[in-house]
Image (tube, rainbow over all chains, first blue to last red; front, side, top):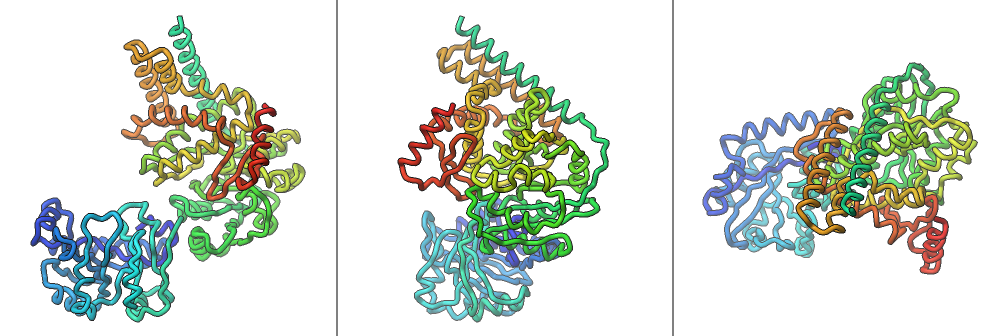
Length: 207
Length: 389
């Protein structure tokens, strides 16, 4: 939070992973406690709320709570990551796609398809949503057109609503693709702006 | 016989190191009793994001000082530091102004960035302060107290802090040993004026008498040049023992190498033949060099390992004197010193520098020329440098 605050950002979403437990990779994540679970979600959410208050007071930076639903399988075609931004209650990653999307909609959260296409240097991609876009596209509010240093031109060719994300895991990921929104610094206005996808621009942030 | 000579050389390096520590100790014990609190304009040239930038800038807004202003100057609004500057200005609108101007033709980008800020600054005293430093609330009060009638420039000691990446740890270890000790030795025992660009307090009258920005616009080491000219004018250059913190958290090794090859080139262009004495303050590199020259033997290995152990202990002692925390990163000291030993050779092969995206060729006294000069110009500058030494 402070890395973005010190760099003058206006809005960030914190989206830790909620990993599926029904695959070998997912089981490993559960084993090593690398996932948000139903049990620690409340604590996770409270921590974000605390940091959000601090960020607003110190940097006037808005912090939005979220999760990255991570359906990890050995096959890239089966795997998918979904950002649920402005989440209120826990959503398990083992549920079906429909139930995840419907639950997110019920919570009035924003649904974003993460790194939906091939990424450079990744052994395993997350292509499920792209391959099934006909079926699930209607639930998705925006698709990542850029993630860190990767750009997915297919999103632009299909004219889908888009955003860019830093997929921040390490301090150097600060310098990556970002989204510029032409709206008020307010949670609802931000969600609306992304959904309507008017006045949205992407920029490659270099310190 | 050769080994005895080498042993003598290593002993000499530790003797010099001992004097450096003594100089730092004397410097830290200095007391200032004057209470002189003139109104001050703080000029902060910004370019790009520094680690901890928001807090660094805010620390200047929270000074316990009667009257001062802060001018944040940038070359353009697209600079990533602009957003941070804007937030600071919004938070402290009475103290902070932002200036954006890129009309100057000065080659030194920092000087280029400060000219308009200087022009609009309203007080008779001004302080040039880099964006990568963090200060406590008594900084301005204590620094200004050193500014007596016979003093023309007050500058501060710097300590590197908060390293989280390898590059940043190297950087802080270097600042908290070689750099601070060398500065103190020059100041206390060799009585040479030391000016450090991260914090320089001056009277506008004195600055203009030495030629103002016109005198430093096309040199890389503008801080050295200001200190030298003020000293030549007969005014004192005071190194305040107030420690300002240079926050280096997430540096890459590339950035560390870039800064220290640049600084080595500056020292070579300024010091000339005196630059050859520098390896005498790097006992680890000296011991390594001896090991290579005399061949790897159990004796040379013992020599190298004992030099490395003594150096680690002495650096640890210095870091504690500076009241800085250090953990396991001390084991990186030998590696850092070896890298610096290699960096020492770089200025003999190239005069090109890359400073925050600007590329130059430097000649004697760090006079700048754009790096895209034709090969004839570069050859001329190189020959000029060789023959000037």
